[in-house]
Image 1 (cartoon, helix red, strand yellow):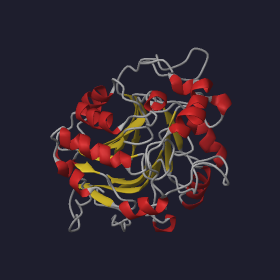
Image 2 (cartoon, rainbow, N blue to C red; image 1 turned 60 degrees about the vertical axis):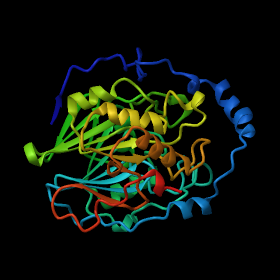
Image 3 (cartoon, rainbow, N blue to C red; image 1 turned 90 degrees about the vertical axis):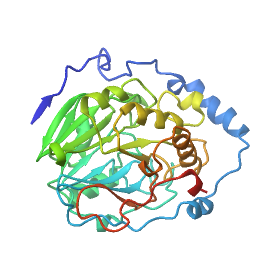
Image 4 (spheres, one colour; image 1 turned 180 degrees about the vertical axis):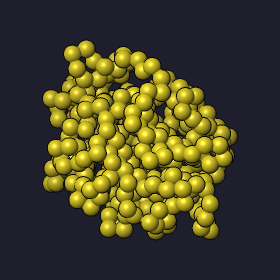
Length: 360
């Protein structure tokens, strides 16, 4: 069942079809000349020491997943980081995958494009029964064809939630039970309420289809009163003015999955990806006292120029500078499970919290 939670403005609908960011012009990221300047001029001038894969693996070793199976207690909220923006979310007794990517590359082809720096934190064969899959937009590092087809084969009754326009691609892969939502629209799934939220980003799996489908984030809620559980999955986004609006309309949240990587050079990426300091500021603007910020969109695919180990260091430093509770910043290891709230948490389930002094 679909329902409106507010009167959604249509400013993000592009006249003639497609979508746009209503808060800012497209910026340098949409210009071919800027792309060439970054790749041919800025990148060759970058003299920062490179972080190789061995150094990254030593600094960020994987964890053994400890998620409950086949399902968590309906009162529990449990997150396990697969890598990049992929999470296993256990909420309301349901198992959801967020932006699932098990592929070796974030690319339309298997022989080129950004390759994983770390394997998926959960072996695909070890996944619990999947009830739903939620995707934020159609970029290759969030919507992976081999993974989608694998999920369709292994979880044929799972439901799919996607922004407007993405459902057609999912159906072509064989997915059923697909629902597409506009910003501020909600979907009821067996006691869960999923609401599509705005983001400042872009879309397109081909150069000729830029912004032909919608992008965004999601809030996922269940229960009421003391048993209310809520997560805000921030989609790929630059800093933009709707973060406090999402918090006011749909919060408070127990956890906010916040991107912290793929921001350098900021003159080029600043209109589509948030940097770690702005991510911490956005988390504060969402205004959910006691919430955990789960860092995502880092440490798996090298998409931009910052060293692979930099995003968590900057995020932890910004967190400390803001005087926030160090126990509420979770910079997960691949495969790490965090029991956000609820009964039957195993010993040490609140581990994995990042303090600036703990990071290499």
